[in-house]
Image (cartoon, rainbow, N blue to C red; front, top):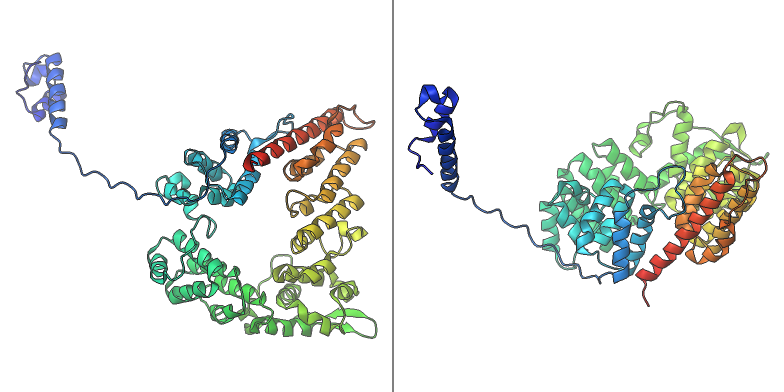
Length: 522
């Protein structure tokens, strides 16, 4: 190849103006020289400084997955088709089984296989419901990977404490340094982990920097005090009632109202009890809602402006009753029990407003006695609505009951009222369902099929059954999976749909039973 004699600038000028006007070189010769000059220019560059390698990820001390379980996880993560469409065939929906698989793996304390972490984080990126379990299973490597790939940055701002290691006692200086110098998500995770480990230390850590935090950060940090909330938190929360952020003040008031012995709870109870009384002559509850929302009420968290469509006085009353300790009401009503108080008639159409506020109070204060009273008997006609307590409120009240009692209540509700109103209630029952609840659901589905009901209206309950029925009950369902003819008067194809749905249910339960065995090898 000819040694180049022209400079790079000469070659550029010749190329721009044309070889006939600028030089005596033929076009091909010019290109040859340009190629050689290009190599020469590149070879003459000095290499830049190498980027520092990332810090090594923290070790994960948990035991590895059994081989069969690791292969199953790979299969679940590879199935990204989901269960869309009205007809899904008889095959299990693998993606819908992934949350349950993760929960079981976490219960056994397994570590995630490193080679499957990218697929796991991709799955959690697309489904927020997967994130808590996925990040717990992924462990410390999830946050390490998230710093290297912006697609996984959700792991850095995930639910507080997800995947965070508990602080080691007597390492106060390391904890304080992480608190003062860490990224926001790291500080949230640290505070949540410390709160679960040492509530007093967490609150003192937060108090030390409270005045310099941004309003949105103060709100997130304050929310971490829900864990281990106790009377010792009252002075800090009382101080937060004067915060310049409205949202921070509201959260502080909510937390204080969950402390029955707090000064705020006492103030709210005095206000609420002055509005609600028993007419002893008639045995009727009478209500006189507040006529104004004064500065003291607003300071204690009462929102003055009512939502569109709500009367102001009713809005203020509901907030007062919701924040009042439920333990104050029996004395107000002559020593009556919660069941007896709930059974009293209420004058002037205030029953719905009053009972709804008591429901919110029972949920906030986790009061089992009042939750039972407001739920009432599952077989009562008003249990299915439209009584004073809605189905949505009943679902929240159920969450306060012990798991076995909750399942039994819903099983009796379904036996009395069927499945059409039970979907919300089933959603708060722990999985796998108790035997009585599972059998009640299956019996109701079978009754609906025999009655010629539209099968598509039960697809949501059938989906819950696939995920929540005890897999050991599968043998009882084999008879339901047999092909049947369309019931008389039903929609064309209904029988085939019911058969397909029951076949999918049985195949899913068998797969779940296999998955359970793979994660718990003998």
